[in-house]
Image 1 (cartoon, rainbow, N blue to C red):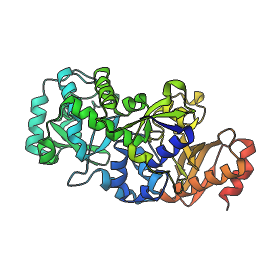
Image 2: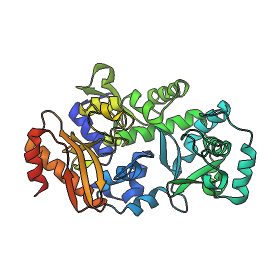
Image 3: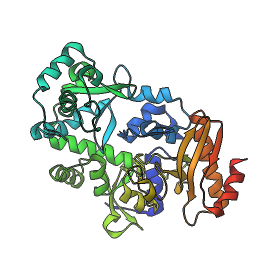
Image 4: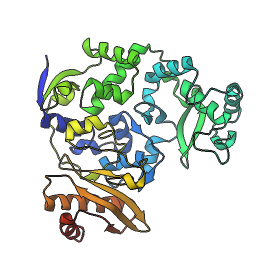
Length: 393
């Protein structure tokens, strides 16, 4: 039976599933957040903090940053790094579910570079001397661009792609590689899942993490190629993915047919909404088409856009308040001051209430990163006075 939801009901289910509505989201701290989300995207950009830290902060508030790091990279391993929506931190219990991708990459025999001939030598170095970092084997060529990797760097990343080595922790943002057999629990290594079994179980994880999701949302979460997307379709239609078909009134016709976690449909989402800045790589907003559909919010990361062509800023963070995306902040840090280089409200948002939400989000973020002052550089003229008043409260 297909369940019918309003767009507002779907949005609230999504927020609860993402840990941004209700007190349950804070239980278990950062480790539980990682399990709830299924995947936390990594990125090299660090504004206020790195994106994987911002994801936990958005849900938990000003939690200690070392506690977040321990939830991702600790000993024994609680998580590992691999390809999901993008390069992500994934719960270690999901190791066996990515066997389909490891098999595909092994058969492809290519990543962004040709696989070099020193793979066996690098693997033997890990076996004898691991855990190791790229500093131990030689990373990017001196003076080269970021993709101008040495053969040893290409080899170690290839070994990670195919599962011979694994990264379960970082040191100073540098990956630490070890033999998979040493780092991954034996019972997970013993699981031998078919491609269909992997996709079926991952579909359930993605569906629970997203709350309500179209087929396109699920494919994007897992970045599935057509052959694997066909396996996803089969698991949805025969029910093995464990998701319930729903129709969302108010979504565009092509997006109205969706899937939901049946547990999420059992009770009405209740509780307090988080007011927070969101990383542009947060799974609530990482899919632009989904963000526009669910929130009516058009978002684009402008970090790689020439400065003169940016509209909202280098690392613009959407502002979540009251279950809506109400504005944007392009943040920076100058000493002990958190700077809103550019701040704006979405059209139709009440200026006074919106300014108060912006101020709350800015001050909490400032406290979290150790700042004791907030300054706003650029703001829409009509918002200037309400925001200045709200920040001074």
